[in-house]
Structures are given as C-alpha cells and as structure tokens.
Figure (cartoon, rainbow, N blue to C red):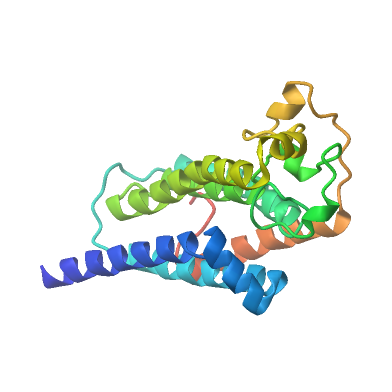
Length: 234
C-alpha cells in the first residue's frame, strides 16, 4: 500500500513540476527578466533543456506508478505512434528556431515574412502541434491510468496552449498587427492552404530534413534501451 501511494506521489510531483516549469518561463514578465539576464538564444536553449529533462522525469515517474489497466494491449496499437512520429520529427526539425513571432520556439521574428510563412503557414504552432501528435498517438498503446493521464494531459496542454498563445500574442501585438502576420497561417494544419490563403510554394531545407530523419532514427534506436519497450509491433 505504501509503495503504491509512493508511486502515485512521485507521479503527481513530477506532473506539478512539469507544468510549473512550462507555465512560469513563458509568462511575459518572467520571460522578460530571463531574456534580459541570459539573452534570447540562451533562454530558448535553457528552456528546451529543462523541458526535456522534466519530460524524462515525468515519463520515468509514470512508469513507476501502479499499473491500473483501462484496455488490453494489442499489436496494432503500436502503429499509432509509428505513423505519427515521422510527422512529429518533421514538425520539430522545421519548426524549431525559425522566424515565427506568432508562437514560441522561434527566433529572429523580424525576419518573418507573412507572405511566405513557411512551416508557420502549415501550422502556426508547429512545436505545440508536434507535442499534441506525440502525446495523442502514445495514448493508444498505453492503456493504463498513469500513462493515459500522462499523455492525455500532454495532448490537452498542447491543444489548449495553441489558443492561449494566440490570445496572448494578439493582446501584445494588437489586433491589426497580429492579423497581418497571421493572415496566411492557421491554427489547424493546412487550413490556410485548403482555404486558399496560402500558396503551396514551400522550400524544403535539406539540412532540416536530414535532422528530422536523424531524430526519428535516434528515437527508434533509443526507445528500447531508454524506455524499455520496443517501438515496433511485436
């Protein structure tokens, strides 16, 4: 009984730590202080490293929580993350450190071209979309309470974050400027393209494509030794 309570306690503590570490740094006043002390690039790098570390801690804590089954595992369920993760890696590779004043994770917002928004035209918040896809796909093969809570909260956090960032950016920029910059972008993937607001003229960076492939290969090779579960159906 005490071990079970301890397992749930570790999981709850890791959840609180994750949300605090993500909510505080992006608050405008708090972010202004941090970027003033360390600079924009160092802040982005530090925020990314902390996010990865806290995420790893949270996944480890979920694995130590008591196993309470919600649905039985099946071989086909593993295809959900396997189909989603290539898209996730592409979103991360093309969405990280690109000119994007409309979301977080971007750099050099003054270089953003609203007429040719690139990946931002495909999805205004590529990093949050990547998180939502990763989490949603991993719910399918993980049918126990701890992992459903873990991945379900991640997916909900990412989806709600998109709307929250839009409201915050619109308030800070003003309606006119936000509308001008976001005219050829969309909250939902490819919506601007389907609505005719964006022309399909994307230039694919070979370097970023290689980064996406390398990231996917690394995740596949490290999944078994790090997570303890083979990524392919078996």
